[in-house]
Amino acid sequence: MVYKNIKNIDKIVFGTGSFDQLDEIIAPKRTQNKKYFVFLVDDFFKGKYLEKRIPANSDDIIKFIFTGKDEPKTEQIDQLRDEILNSKGLPSGVVGIGGGSIMDIAKALAVMFTQEGSSTLYQGLNLAKNPGIYHVGVPTISGTGAECSTTAVLTGPEKKLGIKCEFTPFDQIILDPELTLTVPTNHWFYTGMDSYIHCIESSTGCLYNTFSKAYGDTSLQLCREVFLGEDSGQTVENAEKLMVASLFGGLSLSYSEVGVCHALSYGLAYVFGTRHGIANCIAFNVLEDYYPEGVKEFREMIRKHHIDLPINMSKDWTDEQITKMAEISFALSHMWDHALGADWKEKLTLDMIKDLFRRM
Ligand code: NAD
Ligand code: ZN
Image 1: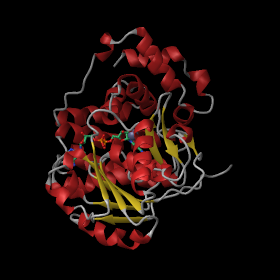
Image 2 (image 1 turned 135 degrees about the vertical axis):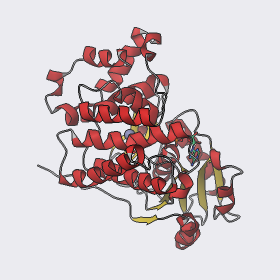
Image 3 (image 1 turned 90 degrees about the horizontal axis):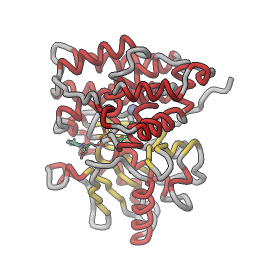
Image 4 (image 1 turned 90 degrees about the vertical axis):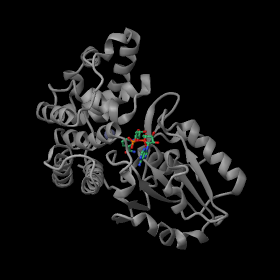
């Protein structure tokens, strides 16, 4: 048995208002490379109060990135890298300020600044050859765990797969719950559920262990308080709880794996571009055979927060689309290994996956 040797985030700041420590935190790194920083900021914040608080000096680059439609793409990372390197050379560091999409863009870019060729060549496990540059994550939506995960998920021409290597995790994260208070209710719910589903999937597969359980149990407890507790909802206190739930859900996964829901969700994302949080919720809702308790509790949360989860979507899907989604899902063998065991191919057929899609 060879145990996984995981690379974690180096430094964490947590607390309301902690965003204002960013300037001081990055100051010592400003001597590296061409002595300037790149700030990748979700364009939701353009013109908002947070924009004025970004500690950029006149040499720095601030890039507002629109994340409202597509998830991060390999082509987008390649373009950003080439454009920035051609204009100013290798930066001292990258700071990502936004939801899971910006977290992944910042991580991928920090790694890709120092690799040759397209990011499509590095989608997979430990393919990057050179250490990336210093990078900081400031999440503004809680749930994905992208702030602490070892992967930067990208959609390329052939697959949706992460750049997963020891250079990917952030050197520093700043967890300021206040930044998440503006997230619209539906999105707050769908992305928050990512955390809940991470813990359910992590806890019901073969790789589950004491390390994953310790983080996962705490994360689940916090999710239950946020989404089902007496004071549930989008309050300041719950913003803190969900931010920690997201981090702990991610840490639980770092020593375990996602399962059936994420395998199906990747199919939806690939064929229809369905966003991660909502795709997970659509998929999880049909998985009572695999996660009976989790799905029951999830539906209570849906009811409590009056979330209008799309159903009966498959009536508009062609056989070809369903087959493609099932093939994408089927190919994610590490997820099925964890969820169903090493002999999963004896338990699961492509037709069974297609049936699950037809229930959505
Ligand atoms: P997101 O980053 O895609 O953002 C969704 C929307 O919310 C955007 O329109 C954005 O402008 C807006 N937004 C961001 N912050 C806001 C705020 N504070 N207030 C109001 N609006 C705000 O959303 P997400 O759900 O956090 O992330 C999804 C992405 O994360 C997907 O691309 C998925 O692949 C990725 N992901 C990565 C991992 C990982 O481990 N690397 C894990 C899960 C998901
Ligand atoms: Zn997820």
